[in-house]
Structure formats: C-alpha cells, structure tokens
Image (cartoon, rainbow over all chains, first blue to last red; front, side, top):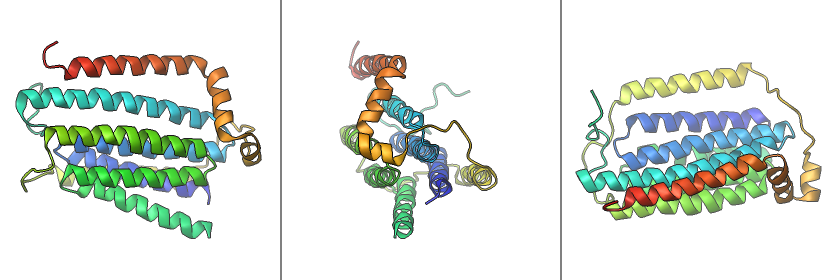
Length: 99
Length: 167
C-alpha cells in the first residue's frame, strides 16, 4: 500500500472530525471529534514517517498524544465545572462570552 | 491480500468515524471512537510501528476514553431525551467538504518529499521499534520530552483545581 492511501484515509477522518466539531451541540461529543482529528493527523505522521524511513514523525506522534492527554484532563475538568454551574453542557447555552 | 485487508480496515475506520459524529447518545459516540482507535492501531502495525500501536491502544483507547466515559457517566448524559442534537448542518457540511477537497487535491497532485532517514524496515525488525524510539527520545529529543512531562504535571494540577468545588 502506498503512502497516498493512508493519507486519503486520514483526510476523510479529518473532514469527518471537522463536521462533527461544527455540528454537534454536546460539548463532550465535540471533544471526541477533536480527538478524531488529532488521530487522523497521527496517522499522517506515521504513514509519512514510514515512507521517508525517518523516525521523527513517530516521536512527534508521541508528543501529540501527550498534549491530547493533557487536553482531555483539563477539558473534562472544565466541563464538570461548567455543568456544576449551569446544569448543562450544551454549547448553544454556553454563551456568556458571546457578543 | 494486504490490499484487501487495508480496504477492509479503512472501511471500518471511516464507518465508525461517521458513527462518532452521527450517534445521538454520547456513550455510543464514545464506543464508535474506541473502534476507530483500534482500527488506527491496526494501521500502525501495518506501517511497521508496533510501539505506536500499543501506545494507541493503551493511552487512547484505554486512558483517554475511560476518562471521557467516566465524565459522561458522572454528568448523566446518556439519558437525554430525543431533542435536537445538531446545529448548522448545511454550513458545516460545506466547510468540511471544502476541507476534504483541498486535502484530496494536495494528495492527488502533490508529491511526498522530505528528509530521508535511515530507519528501514530491516532495522526495525532487527533492533526493535521500542528501542529505536527510546534512543531517539532520550538523546535527540530529550528537551521536548522533559517539557512534555512538565506539561502533564501542569495539566494534572489544572484539572484538580478546576474540578474542585471551592478552591
């Protein structure tokens, strides 16, 4: 399988993630769609790393996973804090900072 | 054989990715996401990156998804009534189709270039993928590695402070 096949799969996954982030109203599902996009980028990194016989891409995936874990911890804590105040995590009702 | 397998796994990946954005209940979305993560781990194995596949299953499908499902359970979101769960479908569809078109355009018309390394499949088979990654992490990428550990520490402190009832 050539690298282009993997890149196409990852492009489709990224577009699906974009659609999910833009359409869903539940903040946790938006969060999961962001994880989907991060994973599609990881697939790109590893496919290119294999194609170029270079390990740097895989090291980068390692750091992307670190950032995703940190993001998960902080983001979910934010959602719990918000739910405690407003009894919802519907992003249509999270509009205090909107003008 | 490998081609058929690739297309099969790609199909499952994309269908479960679609289910993530389509399922009404967040719990179902989460389970579809776990399925996607496992399919990506299979891709990593096919790309001679077994350590990354293991990390994918342990960190993503294990740790992060458990965290997300735990929060869903904590907030009791699984029992939501059947009301509208999307917004702005048309504009979002246009935007994501545009993203897909641009990506496919670059993949079709572009050519992969970059710094060629010397990590061949033969070397990975002989020396072991984990060993190669470890060597690179602790020599060439030592500073980013330390910064990542500080980032994780900050995230832990931030999560505890944010989730506390009164600081």
